[in-house]
Amino acid sequence: MVPDIRMGIVDVRDVAHAHVLAMTKPEAAGQRYLCSSVSSGVRPLVGILHNEFAPQGYKIPTTRLGYKMFWCISRFDKTLRPALQEIGKDKLYDTSKVCPVLPLTSLCLRLTVQNKML
Image (cartoon, rainbow, N blue to C red; front, side, top):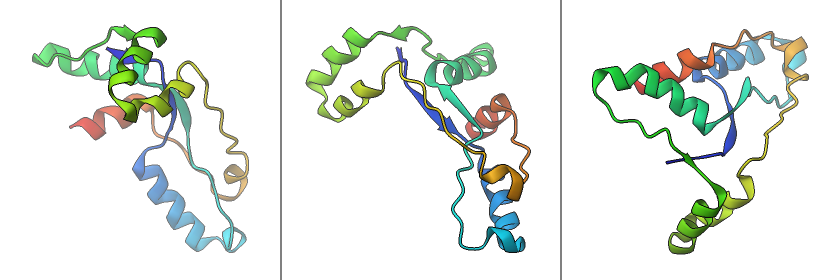
């Protein structure tokens, strides 16, 4: 079962590229940049994995885990309790600061997920 939790996603190759750009551009000196390229839920990520690996025989759970069920499970597993506040909330990140100084071309979410799992 998959909870409706969202998070910022960035490919490690994009982060590496941003580091190189930041070291070579004088205007980037002393600045901090948020390189998250996209906000995605766990369910779309699991969907990508399911489409890629289910035909190969892997069992990837895709059933939605609702808030009430997640709450019940969190009563037994206290490490899940902080995540209750995150269920169903969009994560919006302002990356406008990074764009003019460090022009990144983010990799496709599908490729990022597939490459991380192979």
